[in-house]
Length: 222
Image (tube, rainbow, N blue to C red; front, side, top):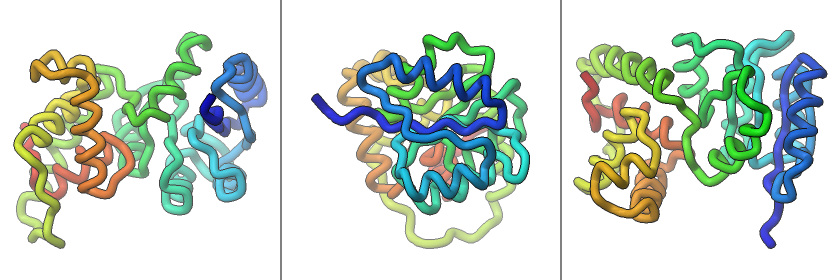
């Protein structure tokens, strides 16, 4: 049996932390290794505990979740971070993804859905629902226009034509199953393409890859 997924919970409300911890502790393949009540404490704990997945509240005292996400991704790049929020405000959503978050979980989600969300991001999936994906695409389009006149930086890694097809569909908010259906290939093949894309771009999540591709003009989103 493989090692359990190590999860850290960050929220300034103790009741929310307790509810999440109880839901996750009931799962044999998940272990809650730590809890923090603000972003600053979360950064310090993550450096010490090296969690696989962090459930991170967006708004907290001392240091918010978005700033803490950026700092954790800088010091522990392999950690996947799910933002916890009461609403899917566009600015928060985009800033969190830019900081390195793998996805969003609204706080009104059914508590029994949280373990599967943790498993999904641990396996490399992005946790972005269709409504949020639509907002991200709008932001990507705006970013693409702003970056149009910026001179290219370092040479951009080359992706194959099929990898670019997969990346375009990721940018539309499609999951592996939907991409497989669209391209008439298996889900495992999609996973392999996504893994190759992330390896070539030296990134850790699908949405980071989309942000990078737009910034480097590999993708044009209109």
